Length: 351
Image 1: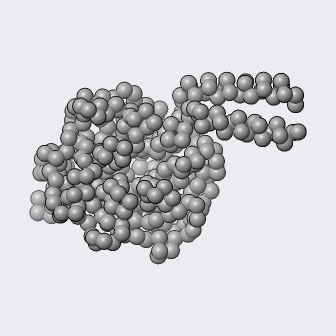
Image 2: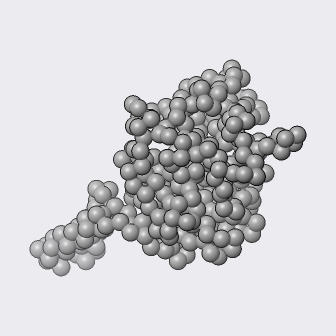
Image 3: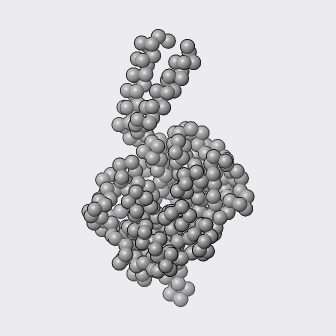
C-alpha cells in the first residue's frame, strides 16, 4: 500500500469515526450475560481500558475488547443477588455487593480467580454502596419496624479494613420517608433501592429517597466524621436538596459523565442532570433517554472511556424479557489515537 493510499485510508476512517461520534443511538448486545439462577439482574463497571466487568450473581465476566459483543467468564462462585459492582479507590480491585444477604466480595480483574474465602471481606444486607475513602464504604440499607410494619432506609458506613467492625448508621430518614402499601413510587419487581454515588472531585455524596423522589447531597467529610464520632446526621437538615422532589427518576445517581452531568436511571428512562454545584436547587434535567419507551424500569452502567451508557430494561417478571442496549460511543481523541495506532500497525505489517 502506497503512502498516499494509506493516508487517504486513514483520513476516510477518521471521518467515519468523527461522524459516529456525532451520532447517538442504541443497539442490542447479542451475547450479554444473563442473570444467574435466583438473581434478578446484572451489575457492572468499566475498566480503565474501556472493557466492561460484569457480575450476574455467580460468575464474573470480562469483555473481550472495548465495545466488543463478547464476554468471557473469569471467575465463578460469587453467589448472591447483585446489588452493585464498583471500583476500589486504588483502581485495581472491584467490590461486588450481593444485596439482600449482604456478602461483599473483592475481585481483581488483573488476577482473576474463582471464589475462595479470602475474597469475602464482609457481610451486611444493602441495596447500593459508594466509597467515602480507600476502605470506608457508605451503604443504603433498608429498615423495617416490626411493630408498625413501616419500612424505610438508612445510610450506614462499613469499615472494610476492620478497624471499626460492624455498621454505623449515619443518616436516618424520618417516619415521613417511610413507605407502606401505598407507595409514592411503586418500583417493578426485582428493582433495587436507590443508588448512592460519590463525587470525589467535589467531596459530595448523592443519595435518593425512592419513595418521595428526593435527591440530596451530603459532604463526604461530614459522613466520615459521623462515622468516626458515632454521630447521626439528619436526612433533611444535613442533606442539601438537589432540585425539587419529583424532578428526577427514583433510581438515584449511578455515575457522573465526562461533562459533569449526573446520570440517573429509574422508571421511565435515563436522565442526564446538570447538578448546579453552586446552587443545587437549580439542578435540572438536560436530556432523557428512553430507548424502549417511558414505561419501563432502567438500570445503567456508565463507561467513561467511551462516554457511553449500557442500559438494562426490566419490563416483566420473566428474565428473558430483559433487554440490554448500548448507545453508540463517541470515540473522541482516545479512540482516534487507538484507531491511528491500529492502522499504523496494519501498514507496518504490510511493509
